[in-house]
Amino acid sequence: MNTLEPKAGERVKEVRFTDDAISVDIFDGRTITAPIAWYPRLLHATPEQRQNWKIAGAGYGIHWPDIDEDLSVQGLLQGAPAPRKVSKAA
Image (tube, rainbow, N blue to C red; front, side, top):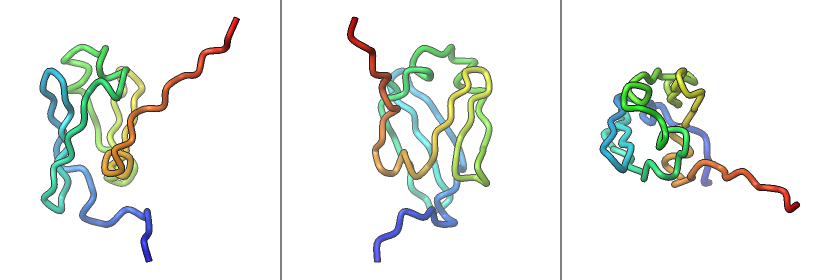
């Protein structure tokens, strides 16, 4: 049976940034890396805002209070970019 429930080892250990990517180390030893362009709030944040992150959601998420952004380990593992806003046609 395949389940989407997070596992204990899938908790956030560390978060790092390069110029074009975010990398999240999780306690089971894996590192998840995704393009920062997938997350516009992080892309447009200052380096200081990106570094001001907190572990959230019992360890299964990351929160950036300065830019009101949240990512989950589950979303990162699924390769899910941030949802795009749909603009209404004029």
